[in-house]
Image 1: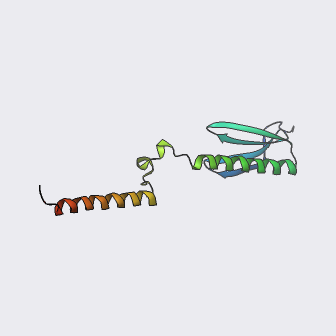
Image 2 (image 1 turned 45 degrees about the horizontal axis):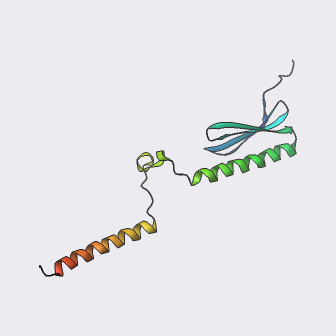
Image 3 (image 1 turned 45 degrees about the vertical axis):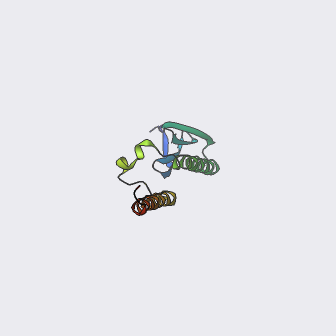
Length: 120
């Protein structure tokens, strides 16, 4: 029976990362390749003939790419991640808490001043 030509070799396929930052290293037609998604676009890169060195180089490159993607998207707050969509209230920062306390104290001081002042 003739050997099937082409396609991915499942023996060398490996998934790296966790959703939404996930990529795959695989061997297709005897060449080591990686595939990942970047900004909704699928990207691919080849690393040469199938060898342990090429596979480890591909794994390291894919981990670095995914780590960079993760860092780039961690600090970006998307509009769909507000309190209504996530079900979680925004975290209270120390600055917001201090501002709220100062405003409360100023309101209280104004009320006391109005109460103490004689009517003119």
